[in-house]
Length: 158
Image (tube, rainbow, N blue to C red; front, top):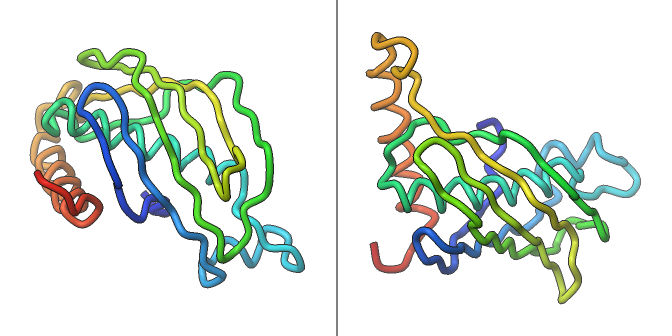
C-alpha cells in the first residue's frame, strides 16, 4: 500500500460494520499534483478510504486469515463534494456478505455532515501461497505487518 488513507478506526462490529476517520493534511504529497491552486483529495483516494475501511473489517472478521484483501469491483460510486486540507472524513462501511474468498459492502464517507463519497463495492481475499506454496513466508510477513498496523489504528479493546 503506497498510501495509508485511514488514520484511526473509531468503532466496529466484526462481520457487520466499521467506522474510520481520515484527516487531510496539506503535507500529503499527492495534493501538490491534484489541482495545485485548489488542492483536494482525489476521488480515487476517497474511494480507497472506503476500500481500506472494508478491508480492515474483513481482516478482523476472518482473524487475519488472508494476506491479500483487494478491490474486485465497484458499482454506483458517487462523489458529492470536495475534501480539502484541514478537513476530516468519517468512513462507514457495512458488510452485505463476508465469505471465505470474497465480500461485498456499501459505504459512505461523510465530512461536516455532508456525504462526500458513497457506493457499493466488493473485495477479494486470498493468500499468495494459494497458487504458489513458496510464497507462504510472504503471506506470514504481510499478515504480521497488518496485525501491527491494526494495533496502531484501533485503540479500543482488542
